[in-house]
Length: 539
Image 1 (cartoon, rainbow, N blue to C red):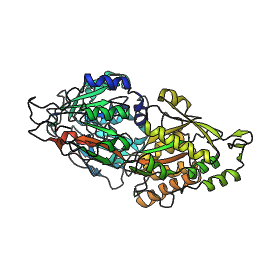
Image 2: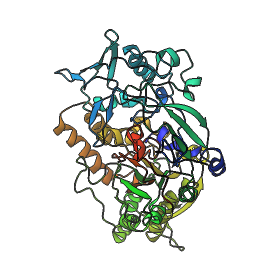
Image 3: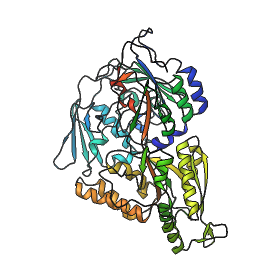
Image 4: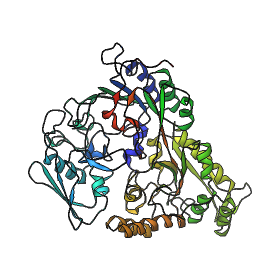
C-alpha cells in the first residue's frame, strides 16, 4: 500500500462537502444549451483526495489520471493498449530492453509538443532519490531510459522484470513545465499540464477537483465537457447529495448503495477489486510481535461474518493481499475460522487467561490499541468486529478513530485498520507491503514485517520472467504468511457506484484500493456518450 493510496484519505472534511452543495453541485446535470439538450457535464462524489497531481510524486502511476496519459493504458478488461505509444513495446529476446515508438502529433494542453524527452524526464525524475515518490521501488528494475530522436524511447532493465510494460501506464509529465520547478513543491504539483482528455480548472482542497474537456486531445475531444469530482468524506452525506440531485454519481458502501436499488433513473455498478482491509500487527509491539498471537488472531477472526454483515455480501474473505479468485492465489492458504484452535495456540505459547479473561505472558497483558480512520464506517465496523472476535480468544483490543496525522506516528507500535491492493502482477500488491527494507518507510510495510524467507521470495519473484519460478516464489510468500502473519487480512471489498442513467458507455475495471478517484464507472468518462433529448427523469 502506498502513501498515495492511504494518506490521500485524510484531507477531505465534512464542512467542505457541505459547502460543495452550493459551490459546485447546484446544477450538476446542466445541458449544452441549457434547454433540455443532452447533458454535457457531470459531478461525481468520491471519498478520498489526492495529495498531489504530479506524476513525478506518484499521481497517475496506475493510469486513469484524466489529466495525463502513460505510454500504455489498460482497457476495460485490464489488457494493455497503446496510449502515448503508437503500439505495444518491442521486447528484446533477453527481456532487458523495451522499445516504444511514440504517437505523432500529440501536444500537451498548453500547446507544446509531446516528445521522447518528456518520457525520459519523467522516469529519470521518479528514480531520482531527491524526488519524494513513495513508489520508487516499483521501478527498481529500470537501469536506464534513453531517447532515440523525438519519437522513440528505449528502456534498459537490470534484470528481467515480467510486468515492466504494466509499469509504463505511468503518467508522463512535461519537461518544459515540471523541469523548471522544484519537483516536490513547485506549482506543477497542484496546477498540472498534461496530454490527457481533461484539463484541471480548479482544485479546492477538501471540496472538489474540476476539469474541462481538452479540445485538442489526441483521442478526440470528450463529449462530457465539464467533469467535477466532489470530495465528500462522509458516506451518508454522499448518499444524501446523490439522492437530492446534487451529484450525478457516487461511490457508496453496500448498505447505502442498496437504498437506490429501486431507483429507475439510476444504475448501480459493481467493480471487482484487489482492495483489502487488514489489521497491521507491528513487529515492535510485545503482543502483536509475538508469532503465536498473530497466528491465533488469524484463525480467531470470522472473515465470512464480516463479508455477510459488514459488506452485505459485496466482497469475499481475504487471507493475504492476493484475492482468492486471482490466478496467483496459493490454494490451501485459506484460514478457517476456529476459535478453539486460536485458544490452543495461545495456551501452548504460554499466554494464560487472567482473572478478567485477558491472557497474560511473562507479566505482559495480551492487549493493544487498534486505530482506524475517523469517518470511515467500513473501517470502523471491521475494527469493532475484529476486536470482538479477539476478545473471545482472550485478547483485548481497544479500537479508536483518528486522522492519519494522529495515526502515522504511532504505526511502529500500534495496530491500524489499513487498506491496500493493486490489480495485475503479484509484485504490485506484495512488495511494498511485505519487504523488510521498507519497514517504517511511510505507509509502505506499515507493520514493519520482517521475514527473511519472504524477502528472498519477493526478490526472486521480481527478478525473473519465468512464470513457473514466479508462481513458486509468490506461493511461498503466501504460505509464509500462514506461518507468521504480520497482518490479519480480513476482506476484499467490491466497490459499488450509483450513477444517473444519462450516459452510454459506462463500465468498470478491476480496481485497486484507490477507488473513486481514478476508478469507478468514470475511469473512461472521456468515452461517455450523453443520452440526448430529455431532461433528467423525475425521482
